[in-house]
Image (cartoon, rainbow, N blue to C red; front, side, top):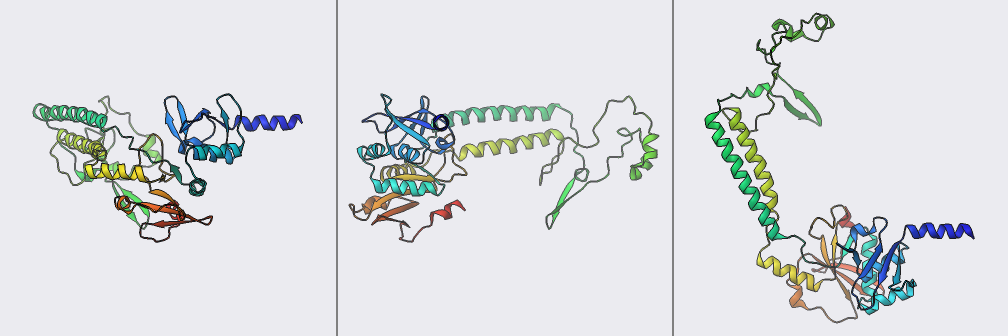
Length: 335
């Protein structure tokens, strides 16, 4: 008996604790364990909140318990009544469970989490900083003596032949001022133990690199290192600004389409490989749950939707079809 109590206590430590409040559309998570909530619920400053289908699914799979605010633990049958009180039909819950069982991330539709006003403010500040740095380079080009760029052949080159990567490198510079401690005629036949043993000590001259610390830009011809550094800085700035361009606010048509989609679909489905609560992402597709015995769908609203999959329930069977009517295999989205 004591062993059973210990196993029960061990399972409870690994169980998510959820609190149900009547008349509330979401359930509060009291204790978080495991990784289930990484792809479920609504994270907030005060903790996680779950929609009824998410909480009941966790309880049905043995990953959570649901209790009332007074601490009374609900049975699974009582948990199913939470779905009914929140207008979540059993057919919609079964669709949620089936899509979830494939490994895909299934969430209630929500508006974009990107704060575009904040993005615009950060972008303006970065552009101003880039402009100041570029101006400093231009001033430096007029005041600093030019330091010529070494020949391109002094840098290594790479080749890929049938998957075998090889590197070719020209001999080191033979400038006596750089390597005066080595006889020039020994550079072509350097790796011998006798030569290494008989090497004279290096001169007291400050060490200088035999190769440039930067590689020339591809398809870019520059006259000096200052100009080269200016070009590399421009390349870096463009890479950063391109990331901001991808976060530009959508057009009015896209905003309207997203609003209509959020209002008319039941779930958004994401890839488990790229989903994160912290990073905004576009869903693989939107899901509309439809019962064959239910009211007809509004075709005027459907015409505005994009990338939608219909989950049709009929006589206990579920079929997934596209807007064209073609059948869909959900496992294909995991490939």
